[in-house]
Image (cartoon, rainbow, N blue to C red; front, top):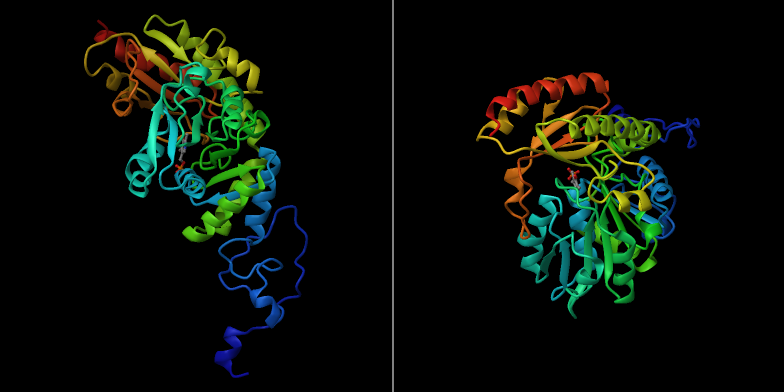
Length: 387
Ligand SMILES: *Cc1c(COP(=O)(O)O)cnc(C)c1O
């Protein structure tokens, strides 16, 4: 061949790469097929690189194992996983029963986008006992969406009881299990049909890449999820799939550290006179602790505290005095973070008076003593504004 053609078609190495413990970061839109028959044999061959490459498949198998699922789909973000799973199983005319404490972008997707396609969303108060949630299920209810603990305010739900009710009524159940990271809560074991998580958080663990997953045991749901990903044209980068898989290797040790540090901070805060209440399901005596103890094998580092009543600007004074905690919306990474939750609670239908400002903390991988000293400085800045 001439030089220009040789640049396009250099000699390729032998087919089998050296076996490393990690998968290849295999990049490619084009997949070369062995013969003409294979071009249209989608069942036997990966024919296009949007999915099915080495690191995609390695991550999917690892997530299937983590979630105890039969099938897992990957999405470009956690929000995409929520949207993709809902679009895959809902139809025009369906009603979605959604916990009022869902992650805010989940709610926005339902109210803004799903509504345009004829799916209505009915919010329920996650503190209702399961039989009262059941009473809200009507003939059009197609799916119940759980998030436990609830975003920002950490309400625990009786996941197995709600999954059982849903199954009896032929309603699908789905949980956003980002808090449990697929590791300390196994929703499919509890009878939930679809387990979703933002891998962006604990599985990735390093605050540098986005991805989401949806896992199921049901072959019909699996086929719908797969068709949904295909039809929406979603693809995740090979490097990001690799990064998620690398995060999984240390998920257990990181979560144990996040849990221990989070509980150390929670117990310290609980004893402080500036703090009204600590909302951490793994903290003995905290709301939802019994459900946590029954269903979870551990916790993560995300929880909230309620500050006692104070003048305007007190929460900002607390947050602005923090030096080790960063102020930021994400969580699940190596770093400690804090946010004021109150502006996000306004969209809720069943608003509760928490008795003071709600602050969410993520306990990162720093030394707990440094974090406690930081919180102490925050409370010191807050104290003059107490009422
Ligand atoms: C962050 C988060 C998501 C969304 O994940 P992204 O990857 O950021 O889109 C979904 N659910 C919960 C509970 C989250 O905290």
